[in-house]
Image (cartoon, rainbow, N blue to C red; front, top):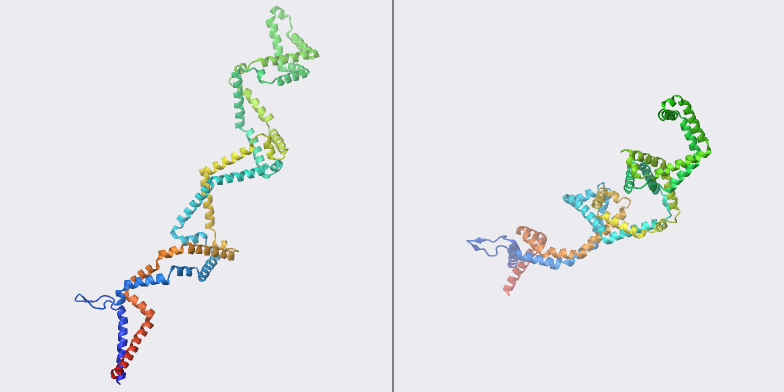
Length: 505
């Protein structure tokens, strides 16, 4: 009985002692004072050493458990690759059947910042494109490309160009414009002003008519008059017999008899008889072939005398509106009889025929004697510089970039993956892995260093309430702490059993 009681008492003491020791780890949570005297063993060991324990736990976790190497190894594991693949596949699968646009997806991701980012993206892309084009090497590259294309084109046969749809379209438009301009008031006014200016110049220089009209024209006119001498004589004869001219001639005869002869003699002369004799005399003169030469010579003498007059004298003798009255018929003759639609078409066809006779456009340009290669090169560079430096070009680039980005943003997500779902999934997965691995390789170590796992754990433990910390520890090690309590009972029972044995020895 003595052994049983000793063992029981020892077990109870051991159990209570260990239980109390475990409780005193946490209790009391705060320091207790009686009459301003601190009660020993208050607060409990863990509340009292909370800061030190938190620091020690944080350092242990940061230095031995969640080390930089351990975290990097976990982030680069096969399981993480598998998770990335699953995530990409899930996203692509969702988008393949989605009616949402790229814009709506970005709005979900970016939220209120979408508009700012969208506008800044358009602006930055436009600026980058403009800066790229403004680069001297890029300009030279564009100029060389355009120059090479033009050099290639001018090696073609002119006939191939003339047979092209573009050429014929341009040709027809040009011809229509030329014909329209020929019949326009602007063309009329232009010729009128040109002729007036030329007449004013000739007046100022005091030129004669023969100085202006080429001698070939004058000689041709005289030859024409001589060749038509018979026709001229017959025409004069015909004109005299016309009623109005006959009356004028009769009046001349009457006035001559009345004024040149005395009244006495005039009484005995028949005016009608004289008139008939004059007409008969003129007819006989004009019928005589020998007199035809004299008529031609008279007319040519008149032409010579007219040509000897100065242009200024002719102009000054004309009334104020005389110049316009003289010029107007010339212009009408020029625009209606000389430069007509047929002449324009014929001239263009002749030029085209001459153009087609060359082997190539390059040969035609070489025939001109112009350094056309340097001219073309200089023209291309100047035009490129002018276009690029123009503000309207910058505005147009900005507009085009905006339109392209907006079209992309309004594209439905499912159309991107249409028919290419598996291929896109693999490509996106590859891109995500590449970006992820680059981040892990280049930035993850720095990020982990900045995180300071030990400090985070320490601060988190310090934030815990003591009661909450106690509950966590008890939840984690409840079985172990119970085992310690019962171990104390077991050891107490053993000591209670051994005590009487040892006392009886």
